[in-house]
Image (cartoon, rainbow, N blue to C red; front, side, top):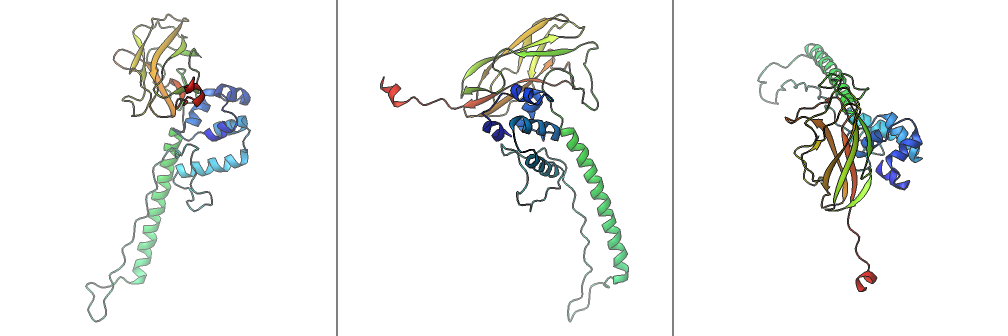
Length: 301
């Protein structure tokens, strides 16, 4: 999906969402990030916005979904489906192999058998029974895998509760709610150089009835993985009354290697307890590139 977007001149996700008119830019971000297998509806809107071959991408998505359920055909001409960045779709529980049926001991030539061989008439019902158990176990495994894969396909984008969540927990405090307003600085997809330090600023609104005091935005991926963007673990949110807006800033240092860097943040109290357990996080997404080498003419001057 990253290659398809690049072939279209790397348009911003907001522009792609505008072309689609059916899906948010944050859902498109999550799909391209490759952390989970996006739904076909999300993938289709991305392909349409980028002018891709919808039929070809549908076939590719179906192979990826089948692989997530442990049913992909490894011998297909295209091989197992993968994302453009080389990652596989979200993994699901692998199907358990059928239990092997031990063969009856055979007598060796010239020596008596250690035990009486099993008669064919007696072994057939036992084998049928074992196969039946294996089939039932396989069906149960597939049903469990489908349920698990369905949960993994959910994605998030901002601090607004996800209406599609199957069992939303709701806010920790009754009447509490937040709404994302804008990326004030560093729009998603901005290119920064390796080891560059920048300040990311979001603007959100207290859209509920509960005043905000002593709140923070905290990284979701603590402790951060090696090679990710370096930031404080949490940043403070200024006191905010209902209907007021607040700007939250965080100082970020890009990794020392080129790539993509996304960091997600959730609102917590001083003890690190989530205020919106079922809400989508706010985040920043930057493309990290190597600094340009000076030209010989510039060095001469």
